[in-house]
Image: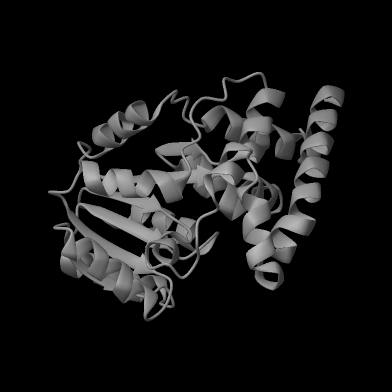
Length: 249
């Protein structure tokens, strides 16, 4: 099997890996099952940006394939599933689902790693004031070794990572290999920035039309230009190329 065919096969495996949850409650029940495990469970999200990155980053691709739950996030992943004839299911994006996870499992001990000061402190303070058991937090500008020491010191039941792709996925895979206690790790991207109101969510009309990416691009054109203005066309080009290669074998 040549390299191109192997890459196409692995990208198809990512589509097949996406959890076929049909509703919010089903997604939360899937998380509850992971909390019963006696080892590290990783919950990740795939969107168009993640698919594009995985196409050229084998380490990141393996992180996605190694996740215990891989949820669909956005219109890009919906298109990916449709192309492979898979049910599109529930759009379980992290910005919406992670607060639901924290509320559903409010009695669990939680740690936050991600973003930068003062936003990580603000996010932790908001959840502590609402009665959540947030034991500790640190910013995301740390080595794997320092973050691992942090996790070992506090031994949370749930760990939310908000460092962006692929750093958070690399570290969650590191925990899978090295941490020996029960733990559910959730890869949350910019979740702490949204909680702390550093970034604002798109109005509901944008979300209903699957145009949240456009709202974010309009509000942060410099930071997000490559991700959306270049990344979205690149996603469609890569998806088309992979499917064509798959047909040719």
